[in-house]
Structures are given as structure tokens and as C-alpha cells.
Image 1 (cartoon, rainbow, N blue to C red):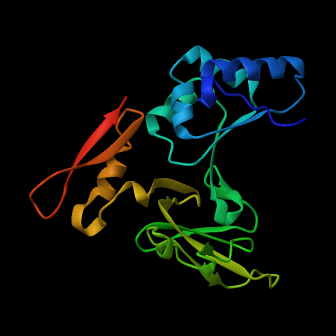
Image 2 (cartoon, rainbow, N blue to C red):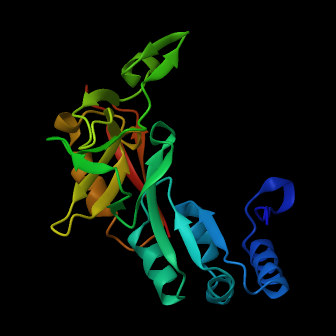
Length: 231
């Protein structure tokens, strides 16, 4: 059975339409397992209405959530509705998701650098990025924030591996699970000059769905930042 593709008007995300389509699919074939893939913003919209969230819970076996960190308030709403959320982590460079609910797939090693960047090591990590026809191993060449790819020690069976040092901040807990905090492009200025990285992590614990730093004009040499939140 092929994937269920559902959209609202002009391709926008429509929780009501999605719920109706998922429910119809489940009723047509109750034995087919159904997996829904969403980003946190979509989960936020889906859980605004408890009835909608509960209907999706009844029609799905798992809801894969990736692309950004899931805000605590949204995660709480999803849990209240019984939504079977599975947090995923990965990228194009790792051939898609390779960490599920904080734990790596077999053959994948997760870690962090001294500055808190998430690292992913596996045989299938890409060799690099094509920039103007040239293979490069650092996204700084492409205007990124410094993500890079390095050779890693081979796997126990001798298979060559590479490590992707990402643009993401995260932590590895005592239980070995990774917690993804934020994408570095969300903070436009260096850590040492603003301290915004720690501030962003603090704000992520405050009730609400989204928060964003907004640059403000200032005669000071350091641009000011306003913190806007959406609840």
C-alpha cells in the first residue's frame, strides 16, 4: 500500500483534513499499520484541538516527529492526547533518520563535541557536499555554520566510516539517549558575544509553542535581540 498524501487548500497543512483521511484509511483497512511523519509546528497545530489529537491517536501506530526540537508544551499536549510520538533525528547527510527517541540505529554512534554539537558516525555518512562542482567536507564553503565531515575509525568488521559534525546542539544523557536542543542557524551571533545559546535552551522550557530571536537596530556595536514567543 502506498503512502497516504493529504493536504489542505493550496497544499497547506490542514489538521481536520488529515484527521479525516487517516480515520477513513484506518476504517478501510484496520490491519494496516499507519505511520505519520510531522514537524513540530504541525504537531503544535494538530494538538490545539484535543478531539483532533485523540482522533489521530486512534488512527495511527506512530507519529514520527523531526526537523526541529519538539517544544515541551507541545510534547505535553501530545502526551495528554495519547499521541504515539517518536522523536526522530537525522539528515540528508546520514541518509535520513538514524536516531529514534534518542537512541541510534545499529551501526550508528552518537556523540557531542566540546561546544555541544551533535556528531553522527556511520558507514553511510556522505563523503561531502558538492559546491560549484567541487566536493567539500565543510559547509562553511556553502555559507553554513561550520558543519563538517571527517574520517572515523572503521567499524569492528573493518567497514570504513565517516563522522558528521552537525550544526545542531544537543546532549547525551546518562542513559545514552540524545536530546536535540536547537539548530545553530537559529542563533545568528557567536555564543561568546551574546550568551543566547543558553537563553534559547532556557526559553524552550517555558510554556508556549515557538520562540524566536529578532534583531533590533541599535547604535551599539553589538546588535540587540528581542525574544518573541507564540503560544
